[in-house]
Length: 113
Image (cartoon, rainbow, N blue to C red; front, side, top):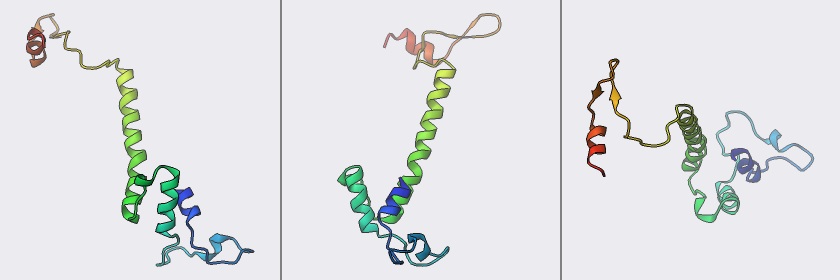
């Protein structure tokens, strides 16, 4: 996503015969892309109100979106791995001798909510 946004909104510093990458140097102070063009491109790519006018909020969301996706994927995989099919308060916690250890879940289960 970030690459397509940047390449679609680069400020060209070179001629047509040179690569667009030749116009930029590592660590330069000036911006290499136009945020207004990126805003328009992102608005057409997703939808108008999902685009950002601010470069910092754009970069934060582009960084946070995959991180949150990875977290939820890990949560889903671990949920399936431990066979957690939701909140099930029907089984009580028992000790090694088989005696029930009363928990708040047992009280909720007895309340028939």
